[in-house]
Image (cartoon, rainbow, N blue to C red; front, top):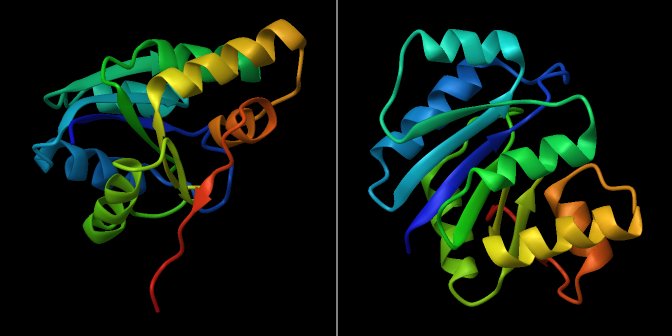
Amino acid sequence: MEYSALIFDDCTDAEDSFEHLETTADLFVRDLRCRQIVVSCSTEWLLQLAQKPRSKMMLVQMSSAPYIALLNGLKAITQENVVVVGLGRDIELDQLDRVLDSLETYPAVYHDKDLQAFDTRLLMFSLQLAIETNVQIDSYATAIEKLSNTPLMKIENEI
């Protein structure tokens, strides 16, 4: 399954790090299924990334307004499926594979706050509805949960 990767994080949590950003970006660069990498995070980190361009990567300025930040990140996506990751930890390839396998059969998959996958059209519909109805959202998962008739498929780490 081809997909776009959206690295989306406001970079304010203690566990967020530029090292996680670089490791995650490199994972997506190496993954042949990933057709595009969109990064939306702090200006400082975007400037650091811009100094070492990577293939498939597009940088999007993070807005301080949640609706605008969520919409701008998603507007840059070109594929029908999007994997959304945060920067609280490194993403493992086996976790990514499990999420993508689940996305083959279900349009909204939630592993944890740092790894989710969605049908891009469902996500765009949910964000548009949030704007039209003025529903408060702070994440893509929240938009799906509050505004679509599609509950998130929650998958967990295997122990």
